[in-house]
Length: 381
Image 1 (cartoon, one colour):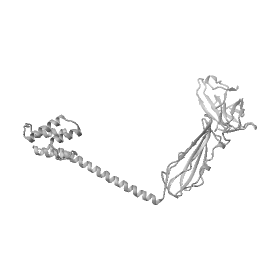
Image 2: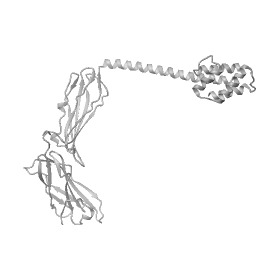
Image 3: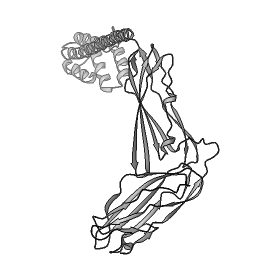
Image 4: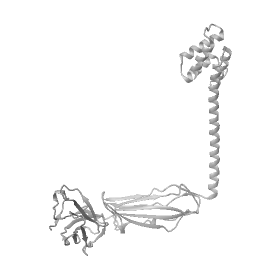
């Protein structure tokens, strides 16, 4: 069986029925010191039960390189235009070069184990890598990659003095060499108003498509010694951004926390309860007053409809003026002016009020007053 070393991406036309194809790639040909580079190998085969047997990946003793395996080897089915089904075997490593200069990475021995037949050793390439020297102002312990901080505070704005609370801080290093993950313990300093107990640290390593991610979670027990605004420690981390090629800083936005004694909480609780009850009473009074005004307006309008002569109609309109806040002891003419100023002009209402005024002066008004007050009522709705 023939074994082929591929330095370019595989396509369906490259596959041979009898020969698995091997491809070895670097995620980047040029990196900074301590910057992560991912080595990937892929072997394409028609044997769905085939496996790879890979020796431990060790650099040469004179090379200042650290290598971390990224999980187990993978196998998945790939699309192919050929008749036979194709499968892809793979393995990845995260490599951290610690010394600048040109270096060569020699892959470990890789053997192909088919479901039938003898084990075959695949030819592996030597991969060239250029490692750039970090700027002189970058300390040897500074992380290279990307660092992010997260803060989780679930105790609310108000806490009780001398009571234990939990503060959770997340530190994530994306593509960062683990020994350079910054410790946060030294930044967790106590103050006159704050007591910090020994924290618990949880470490987790996640293998992603882009390489290693280190997730640190600090569980920090704290107590407020006295009442007042609680100033949590300022947490910040500097790192060298390998993409931008410069130092960046990330920090936590601390939550607002106010510590109160139990007596203060009772006093504030009683005060807030009193305020709430007062607001409820005021709102209830205003609601009741509004409802009564609406009812009075409706009754005033209905009293106009029940008028059978000028005197009753005049009294009903006086009642309407008062219920709508237009004042009292208004002439019909003044009532009309104020109503139109507040609710808009109506020629029908103006004509009807004029006819009602004529009834008062007994200067005509041949229409029945019942029809007239009905017309006025409809305009005042």
